[in-house]
Length: 304
Image 1 (cartoon, rainbow, N blue to C red):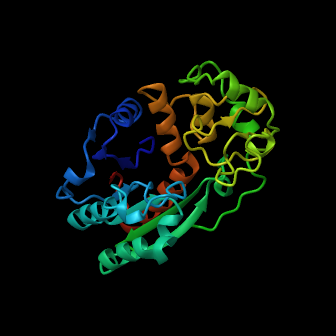
Image 2 (image 1 turned 45 degrees about the vertical axis):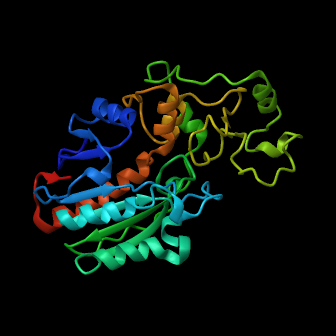
């Protein structure tokens, strides 16, 4: 939305607070609606970008069969909208397991339904490899009717660190004071964890084989951040203080700056930030799709 080459015409999300944040930061064109109720039968767009819910495919969904998840059909809805609109380019952004789970069943579905019209490529991108601050990995699937689009294989060194991200955050940032106060017993556990370490520094949890490695993870100023999810629930710990992150700090680690403001409840703001696509990954998607579209027909305004 900051690039004058693009004009965003339509956006949809079922989360009211996420729509409020979008409306405040990007534009009034967003509609709060279940995507199952959205039609792609609008004037054909140059580009459609979507992120079908990652919950069915995520590694955090260990105790539930994928086909039993209420969001698993959203891949089909994305395919339907793409078929109805037939944009020049489509992009799907999701967790890496979207490509690999159930022997590639869901990627195969995209290929089966759309490859007769589109040349489709898929890549796994890691945020810190392309200039971000986290180890967050995302699957990027790009379909094009105007020539094959392949994401470049980038590895930028040195990596950006937690210190670089958090040093930008001042009281001028939106959401600077948005932080959840932990219970006293949680703060005591936090105090036991060294930078770059996790729950294994806490005696009562040390031998727990069911915990994810990001549980009670304390950030290390001189390293890359782990993936930012809803950090309050884990919690992810500040590098030097016995507290979890503020929304502004997490936003900085996701690559955003002081201009972006999250709305909704404190829990909603945390969830939106943790659910987001990092700025570096989003910028890479924009760069490669824009280059392809401008090469194809040098249109000064690209509709999305």
